[in-house]
Amino acid sequence: MQERILHYLKKSHGYISGEEISHHLNISRAGIWKNIQELRKHGYEIIAVPHLGYSLVASPDKLFPFEIKFDLGTKIFGQKIVYYETVHSTMDEAFELGVEGAPEGTVVCAEGQTKGRGRLGRSWASPKGKGIYMSIILRPQLSPSEVARLTLLCAVAVSEAIKKVTGLEPAIKWPNDLMVDNLKLAGILTELSAEVDQVKFVVVGIGLNVNSSTSQLPFGGTSIKTVLQKSFSRVEIIQEILRAFERWYERLKKEGFSPVVHQWKELSLTLGRRIRIVDPAGTTEGEAFDIDKDGGLLIRNDMGTIVKKMAGDVVVVR
Image (cartoon, rainbow, N blue to C red; front, side):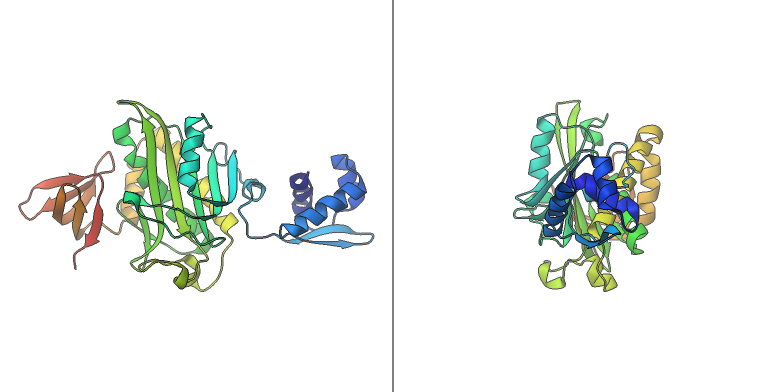
């Protein structure tokens, strides 16, 4: 009922009478007042004026499912949202939901994580109420070897969304980091459940530093607020990420990987640079000159040999 009352308050763009809400929702005036009081406890600033009614003045910067869904406009992404105040890891929760058969586009988000993680088992700083920590379940028609495409696609979508909401233009460091001034702004993690030749589902995790202070982030990290010196609505950013991700995901299905590759290259911080990459096979150094059809990084070493890498830590050699 609270979500329905909020819907009317948001749509009214001003005052709406208790009588009108009562008529539309078939609830007593006393019931409306009780729900309004509960919404205020959640951080909604709602004023009541005799003979005018109720008006929503401000909403809390909380990732409530209703807030994310309001005017979202997507068909798949975000139609089901699981919200936590605090959770160990949205990736773990989303993976469990994937095993249980949760539909494609299901989003798990949290205000904070106690064991947020990035690639290679590293931790991801998740100060409560300051960033976007979410995981999305996908059920793509891809082979396991093609799943790396989704990491690159997601990076393109998140970069596009950040630019649209804030004007900031993060670059992409292969394979999964969004960077501003050589500092990490966001990270993307992809995990899958698959058989030998068939993907059951994929969970794509996004960690984005929005309103975090420098002291809340590890060395080498930054946030949108730190760069632009102002706070931004996390709801607005998460909505735009879901819209952009869905657009690119549908485009991947219809047009293949080429459009993603083209846009990724436009945003790349890695290609055309001499880099050193470390993975379990050892260290490779050379020029990163392209990515292939699976999202692998192609490196030309000093012997002229082309080496393909699907994962690893990249350092630009100055």
